[in-house]
Length: 339
Image 1 (tube, rainbow, N blue to C red):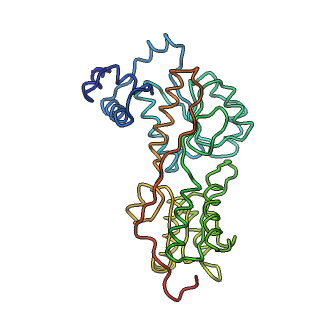
Image 2: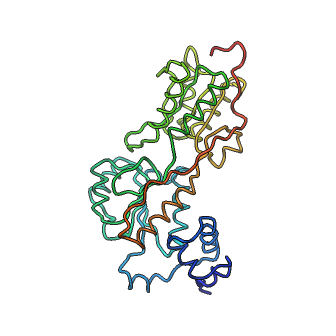
Image 3: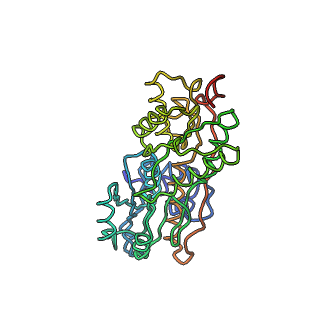
C-alpha cells in the first residue's frame, strides 16, 4: 500500500502541511519536530510524488553528493543522515566517490553532474578551480567540511577549538611531552588537519611547552595509519607520555599499537581522540564529540530550503556544538616517567 503524507502526519500527530514543510526544509518547524517527522517518513517508507512535482517545477529531484572516501566512518555517517532527509522529501541521491587523484581530476574535468542534479552536497574541499566548476552548475551547494567559501552553505564545527580542549586536558593532567597523530591535508585540500594541528600548537605554546616536530606523526585518518604513527612515536628516544589523535579511528589504531607493545593505557600513555566514533564508548576512549549525523541532516535541510527559496541566497555558515567527553584513556603521567 502506498504511504501518503497523511499517514506521516497521523504517525507524528501534526498536520499534513507541517509534514510538508518539515520534509522540504521550510521554516516554521522546530528541529525536534523535523527530526521526528523525517524519522517517521523513513520508517513508513514515504516518498513525495515525484512525477507531479517534477512536471510542475522542472526539477530532476536528484541531489548530487561528492565524497572523497565513501567507506570511511565520517563521510558514510554524513551521507547516510543526509540521504534520509533527501529521500523523505522525494529526492534521489547521485553519488560520486572521488577517492583517488585520477577520479577527482576526471570528475572536475568532465563535470558529469551538470544538468543531472538540483543541488550538490560536497564532502570534500575543492581547490579554487574546482569550486568555480561547482559554482558554474548554478545550483545550491553545501558542505560539511572546511570553513566558509563563496557560494557554499557550510555546516561544520570548531576544529581548532576542539583540538585545544583535548590538548589542554592532557596539559592539565600534568603531561608535558604530548604527541600528535594527524592526517595530511593533501591531496584532498582538507583544512581539518591544519586547524586541529594549530589548536594543538596553540595550547603547547600557551602552556610554555616547546613544540617538537618529532612528536608529530601522520596517521592518514585510518586505524592502520594510527597504529603505524603510534609505533613511530614509541620508537623515539623520549616517547610521549600522552597522545592527541586528530580522529578516533587513528586513536583506536594508537591503542592497538600500545597494546602490542605491552604498554598500559592510561597508566603508561594517555590517549585522546576526536569525533566520538560509534565505537569510542566501547573502548573507553576520551574524545571530543562532534554531531556527525546532525551535520549531514542540517546540510541537507538547508539545501532543500534553498531549492524552495532560490532568491534567498546561501545561508550563513552553521557551526554545530562540540563537547569534551572524559572516559578511561587519560590520566596523570606516571611518577618517574620522562615528562
